[in-house]
Amino acid sequence: MPQDILRTRDETIRNFYSEHGCRSEKLIERRLKMIFRIVPLTSDKALINSSVISVRMIVRMLISLNNSITEHENTLQNVFDKHPDKNIFTSFPGAGDALAPRLLAAWGTDRQRFKSAENMQNFAGIAPVTRRSGKSAVVSVRFACPQSGLVVLVSFFSIDIMSLTGQSVN
Image 1 (cartoon, one colour):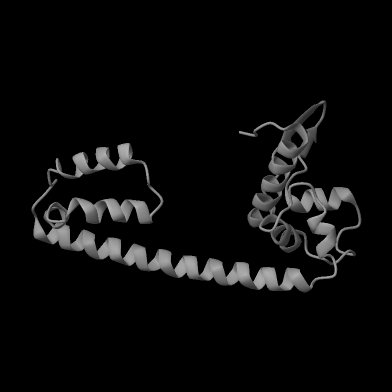
Image 2: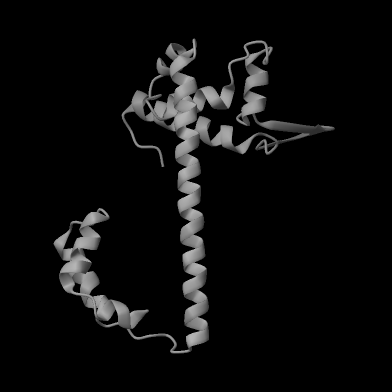
């Protein structure tokens, strides 16, 4: 509630920002000034209480999601650490501690799964789709692919391009 934050000491708010990664005195000062200029949008208790419940619900979902992500990352890391192909994935330029296990999970390790590089590209969603009719041809993005694997591969290719060229990829 706005009135709750107005009763909070400046030092408590400063500590909150500092503990959550904001250490810029100028930015904290600007935020403090904004806080003390707060004008409530409404004083309707039903709206306020309902909104507070909704925010608390979303926070609990985010906490649960973060716990699930941590569990997934830990499990993936344990599998990766014991996997015989670990050295192959860590040898890729830009595939560090976070990306190499994800690449393993995205590609899998069944070497018989893909008969050719083209099959791998199609699966990953990085091969274009060409539709031909008569004398015309249309090339488009491949949408039928596992999106999570595509995100990992795009991340890898972006990092790889940056490491090779020394430039940023936007």
